[in-house]
Length: 294
Image (tube, rainbow, N blue to C red; front, side):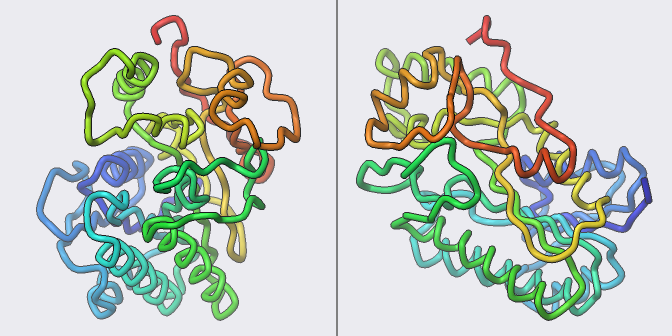
């Protein structure tokens, strides 16, 4: 496994800091980038700046072997629709432009399960089919998901103009094991708990009860950065099971009755397929919820 110089954006956020920390532990030189001062990975160098500024991106990415672009407004509820789209799409295009010009080998960037359009739609929106794979069309109606599609198309454009590889990871909610367990317990008992504006009722069904352990996310990112992949690709990457107590098919019939079930979903199988990533990189999520504790 080669040692690289890697730029990590969004480096004071949960996924960004965890990614930088893991990359440092693996012996890589890590540049942590964020728009503000904050808690960042020990052993990395923090650089503060605006990712919508191409000159800043050029300066911080120059000489890097890889980029993990994880900086973004993380959902459409933290800012107005216009600000979400402007920030997420312009900053990503600037990062991709700088990476291409610097001849960076690989860029891994955070796309999202939300790109499909189920999670934050005003009207109840179900998948057309399940398991949902990367070919499922986008049916969104808000700017966060739109920015994710724009970012994926920006990656495709740049891959046609340069040798840099671009890999988008369509992650679900990604948390520490403790937080995943807390969320699983909350969602399985949400009818008996006071409302929480961070988690609208029914949101877990909209995200298809999917989750990912932070440790699997950062491992997947490093595997991609160390790979020899070429071109532009996107992959679903989620735990193979769900955070709900009830079996998957029972839930699908209740919440998504019109969704076509294209292959069996026995037990608590996630209705989101990560098989393309597993087939390409040989790694599947390892850190799953202890179902007895939910």
